[in-house]
Each structure stands twice: as structure tokens, then as C-alpha cells.
Image 1 (cartoon, helix red, strand yellow):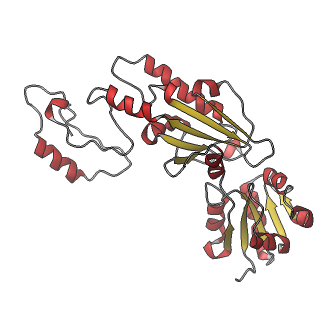
Image 2 (tube, rainbow, N blue to C red):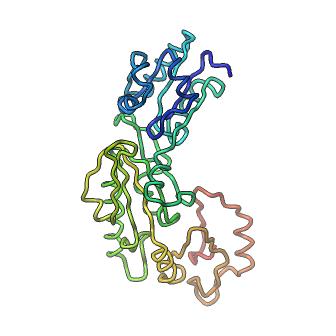
Image 3 (cartoon, rainbow, N blue to C red):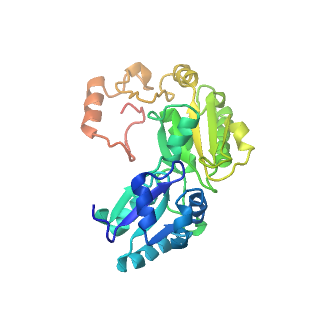
Length: 310
């Protein structure tokens, strides 16, 4: 395989380098790493032989610029990444900057894989998000989901895993969830917020995975909210099946019953508030919703009489 002028993005943190990654690192001319990954790399057998080639930069933009300089010199460049570079990592940015043919990815396991393995829990049914906005507080990147989205995401999916950072840390996440319980208690009877029963929520914090002092802590959001945790860490949130089922059957019709893969379509007239039959009939409502072809995301405004039938 042609390797001249390529950028090799190599994931580290959890397993020894495989034979190809080891060969690339040893034959490289420049190696770039963040301060944390430079420390992690010291535990690798290859470190002693290549330590003079390592440049430590704590800024992604500056790292990209430095790699461009090395690329112009036709030098063999390695960029160390955390775990799997394509899992909310530097891999996507590297391909965007240098082109798909100029980048080769050699991933390690992701921190989420390790976290679920540690707690012996399957993760093929989990919803995965990142709240890692980057190390520079003044230039934090915009993320698809925010802290405030976590309660509704947990209600929808039942199990979510969160990549954290120093701002969006486990204690803050736990506080957001715990506050949702306070909101629930102040609502009228029969109306429940997404997390009406925090006793059915388990929050697991996996600290410093891959380090000698890694630690797993499990508790309720209220318990976790009062703790502090070392970086890096990831959070796993689970709702018990008992809570999911009991919430579905405890709410009155029309008060927000929902389940993770359930789509409510075709409400009867006695499930909708109206006066003296003044409501669009079943067949017309069904055809209307079909014709709308609503997208998965967005906002739809129905300007009507207020019955909520559509």
C-alpha cells in the first residue's frame, strides 16, 4: 500500500498497537498528540524509540496546520487519536481537511465499547451522544444534542451513553435529571414529565478507562449529583423496564403515553377533547396525516380549531 505523504490517524488508549500500526509509528517522521494522549502513549512499548518525533499541541486547529507543514515536506505523519478516531473523534476532521485518499485510520476500541464491557451490558440498543465540546471553552463546537436534551432522550431510548467533558460532566448531567423530578412534583396530577420516576434510573460513571486507576461508580442521579469525578469519563444512563412499562400504563390517554418503538396513529374520537361531535372524522384525519408526510425532525404548525385531532 502506498504510504508516501499520507496521514496515519492511530487510535490508542486500550490495547497494544497491532503489527501494522507499530510499523507505521516506528517508521514515521513526525508524530502529533494532545497532552493527554502524549501521556497515554508513554505506556506503550513503542514510546521510547519515537519520543523525539512527538510534537504535543493542545489545539486541533494548530495541529492541523502543523500537519499541513509536514505534509508539504513529504514527511510521514502520525496523528494519535483517542480510541476509535471515527467515534466523535479527530478522524472525521482529518478526512475533511486532507481528503479521504490522504488519510488512513487505524482505530483502537472506543471508550463506549470499553464502558459497556466493564459493566457487562449490551450496547447495541443504546443511543450514543457526545457532549464533548472541545478543550477550548471560548471556541466550543456546536453539538447535535445539548444537556437539556438528555431527559427526553432517555425517555425515548431507555438507555443512552454520553461522552462527557469538564463542562458537561457527570455531576451536571445528574443534576439536570434530578431537577426534572422536582418539576414533576410541581405538576398537576396525571401529567408526568419525561423522568417522573428517578428511582427507576441508574446512572453509571466510568472514570479513566484504560488507566491503572480506572473506576466505575453506579447510583441514582440524586446520588451522582453530589459527587466529583476524574477526567476522562463517560456516562451510561438506564431506565429500568419496570419504570418504562409502569409509566406507559399509568398515564391517561392523551397525556403523553409513549414507548421506544411505538408510534401512536389513529386516535379514536373519545380519546380527543371536542364538543358535540365537532371534530374532523376518522377517515379524513388519517388521509390528512398521510398526505402531510411529516419529516423525522422539524416543527409542524397546525392552525385549526383547537381540538388537536390532527
